[in-house]
Image (cartoon, rainbow, N blue to C red; front, side, top):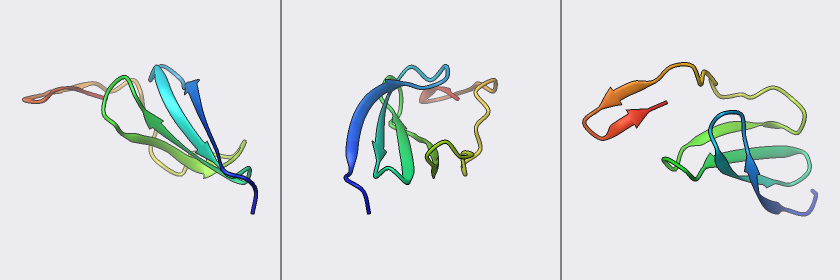
Length: 65
């Protein structure tokens, strides 16, 4: 297993995020809203979570993407 790294990144139109990776898989968590896990998958592979940033819902807790 590779060394675990934690980096601040910009991801898609989700803004500032934190990426945690061991070189094989990565996990991306939002910082500007949430926190929400928005990506999990192999590095340079597909996102195993649904990713549709075009959908915005309003709730009693604010805007949800």
